[in-house]
Length: 249
Image (cartoon, rainbow, N blue to C red):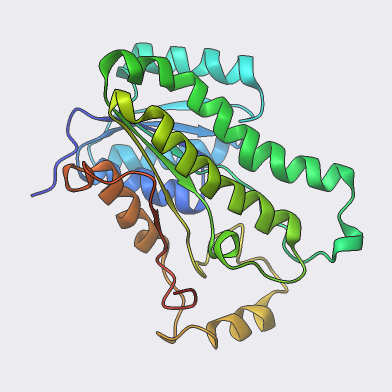
């Protein structure tokens, strides 16, 4: 039976959606969770769910873009729970419904700051410890739109594609220290970020393009993340796993 007992998992953006789902599933397997999010209420809710599974957690509130703040928060969290074994760079934003002409400098900067700079900031906070122990897992959250692209959202597609590039580069760079770096690229998964009010028609249209005929669930992505973090994934690095129902093959 899969066990993550004794492992410390740092999940950015764990106050809702996929991050919350990851935290809950890892806690079921016995892991301790560092719950990072800008939303204190959401992070507290996740902590309660982890506790209900008998797991330990530490809530770390802050903006993933704030390097010094994040670093200090991670030090406090690791002093409580122990060094991070698995980092899940999950924090991100979505804003696909914009034509090229609508994407100004501010919109572009926010997209890349949160999705890309945030991954750098979080990875910096744990990398030295992983190198010292010669062991670690880093899992980035991309998207099918980083693999195949879509109209009306080149900034989002670009950021998510960049995360795949980071995954492959970091996998090669960190391999001498036995630090494995992989990515998940979710398909159509209803979360608070993607399932916004007024998007029902768009959602139905997207479901119609899924060969399996239905959306996935957050847990479908969480199981992929757990695989990368588990003993079963110990010889896997630089890879992208995309649970998407057959939309992108």
